[in-house]
Image (cartoon, rainbow, N blue to C red; front, side):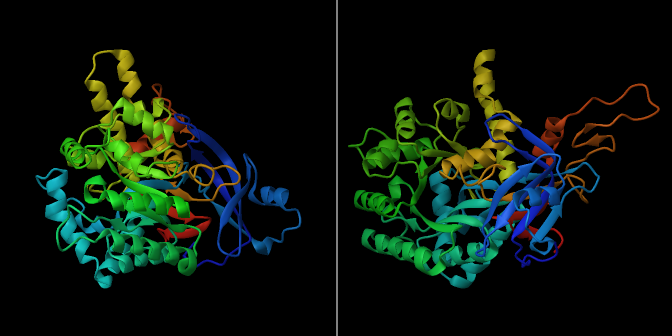
Length: 483
């Protein structure tokens, strides 16, 4: 594994420990497991066989007894250290690629001031394709190196730089939805479009992804920035365009109390912020609603009714003092919830960090009640947060049958995690292995017995991109620490 431009084998057998969260709260561990991936000529890698405690070539021959070894590549993560495992690629359901240079720049601002001070000027500058290429290449490589195999991106209002983002995602191998931002009101004079131009730009984007780029991993997503920045005519036209082309939709919802009051003044005929999107045909099973912190019961019912999904962005919500999303509340209502880094309201493009913050935010919610039962109802476990980072995100994107876990028929979107790497923030002592605590000879008082969940918790709270050794999308290597 020394080149990202590998020979395309017909079958690839991955062997080692596979860990995923196929069901909320469940950590599934399969040791000495072989996952066989079938690669098509266009580079699409689908899981076709999974066998526990099975040698790679035995599994391959079970799938295809006639296969020649020259058509098979074996990737083994069994170095004897007890510190490596395959984990599904992370899914970032809300990230502003165009804001990546601003990570960490939110100063003393809250949401609306922050947009004017930092965000709009930077986004406008990306109409320059050289700047856009630099920024977009950096954010794609950064997220891939942190294990993000699927990302739902916002770009800017500029059509050409938005198409460039799609081209770069395809070139670098990331699965992505690319959203050209649409906004025709309540924006600076230097960074605004009219409704007609916005719709024509979206149509151009749709045609580009379908006819020119033609990469099944990369597509357009309809992106009204948020209700205050879009006229009623634009919102309605975008809803119709998404329906006509069966496209995803992404926007922001109920992030900040001041924002909610503003929406109420702009759309007095609507029952709520959520109802604005509903009335304009923007809610549905392919809709991603970022934040959803302050939604009412009626709004939650509407989101559930339309099968829309929620992107929880805990780092951003804390950084901008927006509030604390009640994730368990959404999950208990049957609403799909995933995680978003929300760069650059969020200061990091690492979904594992977002998962940690989701865990901590749920603890802060629990601190607000003295009732033990209520504490349990709001707190998220480590396993639940890892679910949000993978299968939860897949559900939000209506891709739960394609990505998010290790199951036959799904795409092989995966990261190889190594806990024993130089300068790792995860420190495993010699008696601690992925498959549990090893007894130390010659001592009476043994260290505490650990299990898989304990070791995964150490990674969850201490891990970062240094532990992501390789990343694959559709079975293709797209990031390697060896290069």
